[in-house]
Length: 106
Image (cartoon, one colour):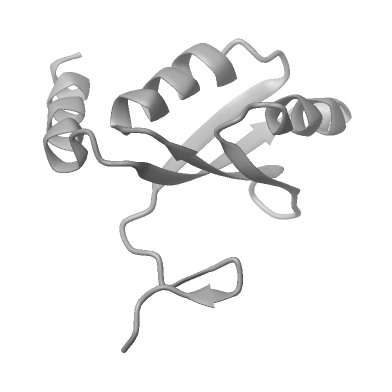
């Protein structure tokens, strides 16, 4: 488990107490997709939830006060939800456009 703690320390050092945004992809039991998407939608940190086709079933966009908040959400809020087979958390590094508005000017 040393590798996980090294990664956690690196991410905490990188993000510290800064707000973080993440895209979370979920593979779920197909019969449970609507229920799971609805349940995930109820969390305050979750901004958008999409049922999608392809290698993943649900994509959620979320914001957290800091990296620790993201970690706690994944471990304590998502993990216990029945029917979730796998998750991938993609932390946003740079936002170029969000909600139709450009964020970075070239």
